[in-house]
Length: 184
Image (cartoon, rainbow, N blue to C red; front, side, top):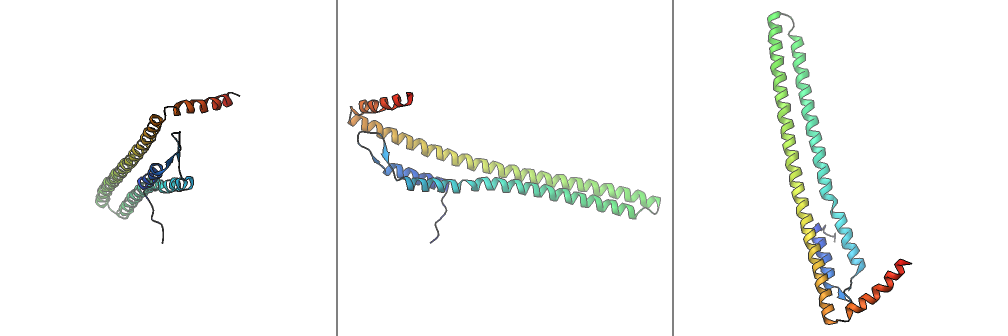
């Protein structure tokens, strides 16, 4: 059975669950977790993250394609107008009529091109805003999850410290030799 692709939020929830279920080491604020399982969840989060980046790249390509198409359409209309104008060169009245017609077509082409470009920019802006909103929401949710996890770890450490008042002294004794090793 193929594994279902998880969202970033689901990956973070799974990591938080591993942290919540981890057993606490006696006389310490540290927890024992399944490192392989945590690595798997981190890899899943990394795999799922680029979808938003790919969406932004797709948006940029779509925008460029729309602008290129608008420019091509405008060039085709202008070229056609010029070709039509060249065909009508036989008489002065016809020439004036052709010139007016060409100007009208060019104005229409410019208006159509401007409309297409404006629509493309509006679509690009809307997509970028939606992407930004979604990304900000995901990052805020991730920050909240991580903050909650950190608070849970700190609360657990404080609870363990209250159970064993000598634990803080033991931690300081353990830290002192480590600091002396760094100094060497």
